[in-house]
Image 1 (cartoon, rainbow, N blue to C red):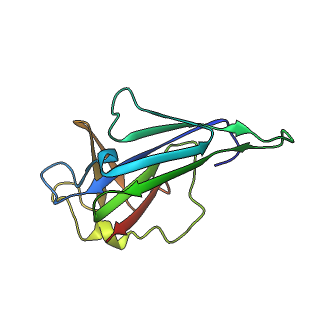
Image 2 (cartoon, rainbow, N blue to C red):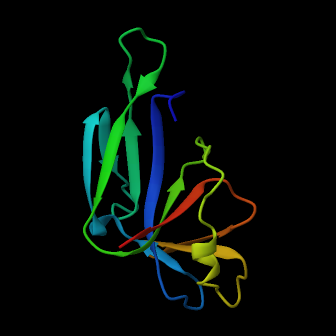
Length: 134
């Protein structure tokens, strides 16, 4: 994610599926830390959306930022990267979301971002990374 000065991602917790979703906004379950670049939170969903403004490197060849998320609660979570970003790690831990199917939206991640719903096909998108916090 170092080719542009701005990027974004969302943080959601995997939840027991309901009719429409299986993930809910969850930034309140983390402490955010940033020491390179600037961090801000979404106007539409401050509890899910993170925006990063990178700092131009001293040689002006690339942009840098460093962000940390310190967990406050255990559970299953997902990072949903913005469309300008793609994960290089092929192991996105999709088996986690397979255990939380939505009946009317099979094989989909149903995002409840501050009451706004969005569905993504798990096997068609490369913008999600699932993880467990013990």
